Length: 178
Image 1 (spheres, rainbow, N blue to C red):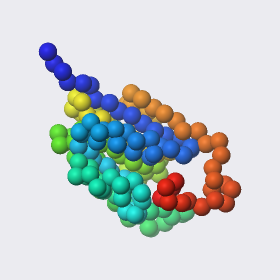
Image 2: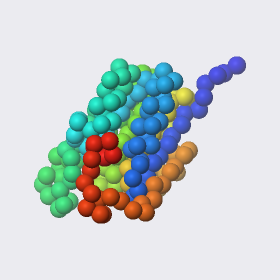
Image 3: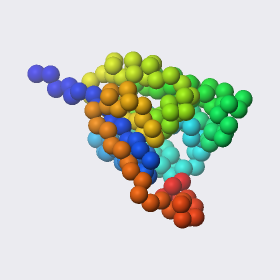
Image 4: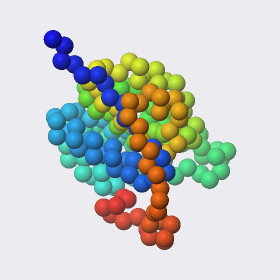
């Protein structure tokens, strides 16, 4: 009897807080089940964030950031090409992780934001999803998820912003945002 489970594709999107937090909760659950994981962060460039500090303790987690931080306000800026190049490197790493039997769990954090900013084309990612091996869990996060990625996922959660501390002048703080 075949005991393989189908792959799972989950997406956390929307303007509310909690997209990455939900994904990292899933990562913790996967580690609890003995899975090997690959985390690829798009746009982000700060290795001192709490989740990376925590999960770097686990040899079952391979973590890489492919970003240069905040994008320039002027999206026509020559600096944007550096951001596109970093995101395309992240895409290459993501495609390799999705194809690799080494990882049971692949988290592509802020990939929807990178796609929304047109840092790379979505088609190679969608092609890779069609070939994901049975049993692999793939999690996407980020605002403005493209409709084609929503269609490809089997579970989609949209976080809705009702109120945020930043709007009240409260800065990010350890344990909450960084």
